[in-house]
Length: 143
Image 1 (cartoon, helix red, strand yellow):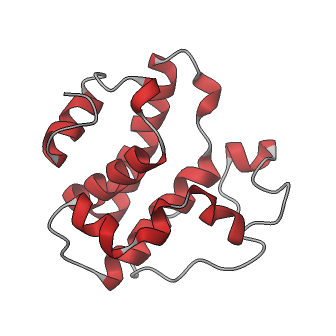
Image 2 (cartoon, one colour):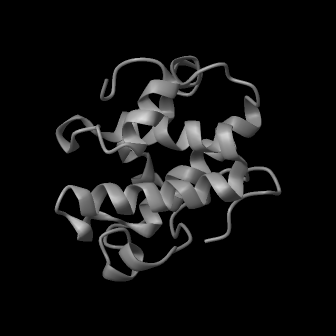
């Protein structure tokens, strides 16, 4: 299974710990965010994303991999795109309509050099200091 298959198969594989670290890249992070938000809504979806990535990092022997600002940034970016496109049928369709999200360097347009690399950004949410994110709906997760 791993990263191939349907969205539901991917989510089940991730939650079962069957997605290898070598196959989990930016696109898979976005897919996971999309699926958690679609299934659980903004608040619970964001919580599940945080918990899932933390567990994934620990299971793969890299507990320090988790980064709060990056995780929250991508949750909010996907939320904003979903607000503009509220009923995408699947991740592939969503990704085709929002190719800007597939650029993992999008975060650099919103943060000055050094901010994202800081230990503080790894540990807690830091608001963008270069350009604000588009405003998602009112139910955006708290940082």
